[in-house]
Image 1: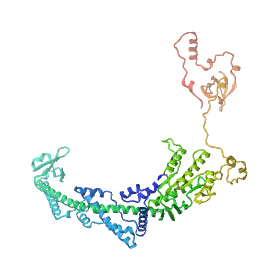
Image 2: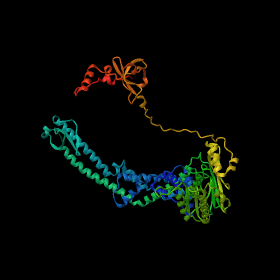
Image 3: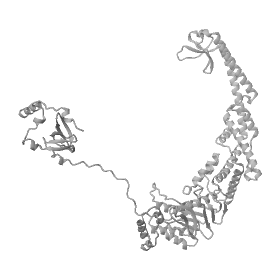
Image 4: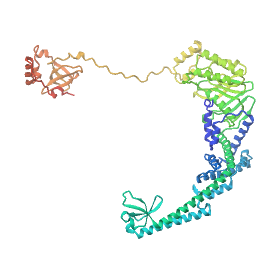
Length: 639
């Protein structure tokens, strides 16, 4: 249901306004209240939170992501790290700021401001953490002992460096470089391998080549051992301080948890106030008289500039409203606007109306959208009927039911019958219901049935846009023919449609719009067909061997030495060369029959003397000789 009417998007918007994870989780699991007392309390909280934000700005709420885990660690007796202690201190600082914010709200006598009494800033704990923990570490001045130990450690490190520098100066010729370094946590000097025995000390490491040894001088070793003892003392003192602070956190664990619970409550309350401010919402009146009155209601997810306020009223003697109108008339938007505002009100939220009086409902039941489900093999009609049957099973005298496109998705006559049957069942249940339909018979049913009225959605015929205005008490028209004409459907097509729908007399009475088209323009893309290969069989006999032809455009005269092939190309003997040329560029000059006797041997003209001898030899006997033609003679073409 929440997805069908887009309440899930409202909850997403709402959750983004929360600071704490606890408040976000509560928003995600939020459902409408069935207790009148609880709903009225939640509505007062929303109004008070909105009032506080309007007067004092956004509250300084802290995040609590890690605090619950930190308190749990402290209660178990484990030692908290400096970072974790800093998180506790920052939370206590935020508590103090929040207390100050709420204290300012008391001057307006805002009930939410008195949540400040449930907050405790634990000044002693906050002060101790602030004094002893700095920059993610225990501060030098956390205790006198720690400060003295760290001074001794620093002094010892300085003496080690001094001794190392003295050794390097006194054994300058033995040094591989003029600096000291730390290897494996030990202060070392770089000694050439061959001078190892001249420098007193311990080899700690060596270079990659092995030519340089990193040695800790003997005089440095004594200070190193002293420094290690100081480090142990420092570590013990640090742990003593951390455990002391951890014990203080554990001791204040109940207060810290109470603080976190209060902050999450305030976060939830203020998130409702922020949502009201963002949507420019108003507090609705709540009743149990089965009455819904919405004045200038808006769909909360639509832009204010595009959203025309909706006037809606149901209850008293009217239990059901049947809404009709064009497909683009805003019927579905109107359904969602009504149900969203009612559901938001029963969740303790402000509504996007100038004024609203909304009854509590035991259930919000709807069927909006085609509902087609391919995985369950359900068509649009099957899905509608399945949803509607579930709605009818749950509907009672305290339910609000919204059904879109009643009886659609099947044969119009049968769909109309089913729509009327559904309306009858809704009437019997005693629920408040709002449905949309296109069936004229259903309009007639609503006109005659008790406790049911018609309504239509106003439609701007000039712009073809919905105005989102619901006019209760009047049945609407689909305007399908008018819209089709305005969009350019030819008048002849509209005549056919009117004739089929209402008969020939209706065609005579129908007023066709000025923008109806005369005829549909024909066009569109076309399939590109492959070109058919030309039939050249008729060309094969066009020129005979020995024909005298003229080659265009040069008008040179030649003799056909190869007739036209399947590609429409022939070979012509010109003075000094043979060329291949398309038949279209050749004109017959003198036919061979007029130039040569019958059975004339053209090899005399076209063959070389050598090839003619070889051919005569082949005709008389077997021979291994081969007749060769030059590449130029066979392949040279005239482009």
